[in-house]
Each structure stands twice: as structure tokens, then as C-alpha cells.
Length: 235
Image (tube, rainbow, N blue to C red; front, side):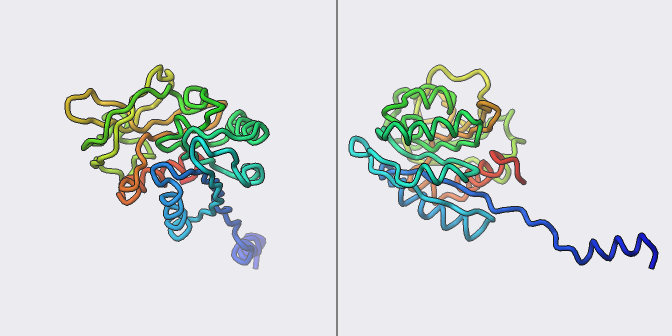
């Protein structure tokens, strides 16, 4: 066997390097039944993808005063998923969240993430990319894919769908937002309901969708799965 044959043989027997599972930190409260939805979503992710989740569960406004386990969870997290509503947390925990964001690590915000922290109102504008405004009462909403965004990796396999969740309205959108989905209710102008951007060199995805029924829709779940892998630059 020549030198080339020896090298090829060695390559055959050497174990291939396995990519580590994505580590997802899921932070949620009870509003919109986010704890239940993310619990089911965790099960879906871990059964169907190379993903390992850590749950951080808190009470909702005004009781929410703690994010148990957040300090340890963010040490190893590849993505921080936020679905809380107006919680006030201890300063050391909030500082840990701010440090994570400042380091340019991936963030995925769902629905009330735009008003996630009562003692960090700027999270919506500084990280997610827009200022939370009013929202319209629950009404049938058609979710559409933007023509310019149809080839974005986050939208792979995602088709237009409908939801009865109230439409959030945002103000002061950051100039770098890449609008992916828009929502339309009767008698109102379309509003962005999902977008992507970069902050401090890291990727951010936000959607104002996320009701209980949305998590049962294959299109919405595909949207979130795609976003998790896009955020971490994995296929």
C-alpha cells in the first residue's frame, strides 16, 4: 500500500467530528400561555432536531421578580429565546442578560418580548429593533411573506397562514430591519410581524406572533426552527 493508500485508510477509520447540539435557553412566563407553548416546543425541537433546551420560567407582571437559573443557562447558550411580559428582575440577572446581548450572541424574541423587561424598556428598540406601540384587538389576521424576503433562509418551507391573534403595531423601526412577514387585519394597514437584523455583530430575530394556536401551526413552528439555525449560522 502506497502513502496515498495509508492516508485514505486512516481517514476511513478516524471518527468524524460531530457537531454539538444547539443549546437553547427558553425564557418564558404565563402570559399567552407561553410556558405551555414553549414546553411543547422544547419537546418538538429535541425530538426532531439536534437541539438541547434549558427552561427559565418566571411569573408574569407584576409578580415576576426572578429568572431562576438564568445566570448558568446563558453561560453555555447558543441562542436566548425570550417570551416574557413586563417582568422586573434583580439587577444582577438583568445585567447578565444585557451582557449576553452586548456580546453579540443570538436572540430570538416572541410576541411580548418587545415588552419583556419592566426594568429594561429599551430592550425592544436596542435589541429587537423597534419600539412597542399599541395593538389591535384579536381579529382574523392574514400573515403574508414579503416579496423581497421570499428567498430568506428563515422562510424556507414557510407558507402564508392565518391567525386570530391581535396585531401588534411598532414605531421607530431600526433602519437595518429585514422585514420577513407582514400581518393584515380588516380595515388596517399591514404591519411587520417578523423581521431579522444584526446587533453588536450577532443575529436577532423577532416575531410578534406566538399565540397558543400559532404554535400548533406547522408554518409558525417551521419559522422558529429556521430562525434558530439561521441565528447560529447553521444549516
